[in-house]
Length: 260
Image 1 (cartoon, rainbow, N blue to C red):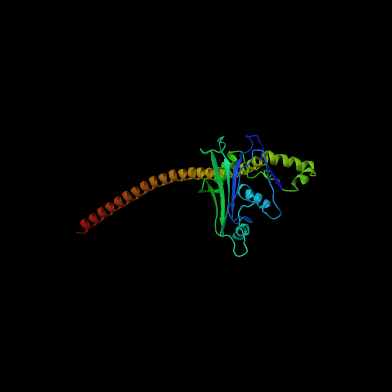
Image 2 (image 1 turned 90 degrees about the vertical axis):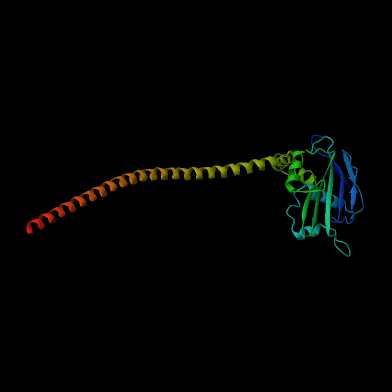
């Protein structure tokens, strides 16, 4: 027997109304679980009938435990019959949205994850979406995939009870969801630090460019002065050359007259 407890406080939980499983682990054919009580739900059955796999199916859609599955990992989750293995598997959870907790204008919202040997897709109301879209939607409704205590496995309660105080404090932070925000804060601080480092490098580069521009402006003025005096020099040289030529021509003419 396995018990599912769903808190009755509507501010803390989005209520699943139906779970549909097909081809996932021990569930070969489409299996529908409904309806769900807003308080306690109990799943009973003989050993090996799939009670644990039901929770694996929930985690498969809602938790981070089955992230980044390899092809082998996907095959291991698909039902393996006596004669053949299922070609694909999916788990769909339908949530009650009568209180509009999920920002979609529908009374129910269906979230599905479907895998095959080559694909791993998420669906929102049977339309393919990005995994990030699902994560953001659930977090917006108050459900964080990163919180590991939405599903408490067998034996975890005892482990929590005998844990040191520091571990229990960490547990409370995780249950309260502050760990997620702490991680996001750390990530944001890292990004800010990297941005500040890049800003400093850019500032240093701009300073070097400005210094180079000042140097080039000085060189430009020096070049202008050089060109000015160079033109004057060439003008004077040309005038001197012209005067020398005229003087030489004059002396030649005088010499010709004297020798005539």
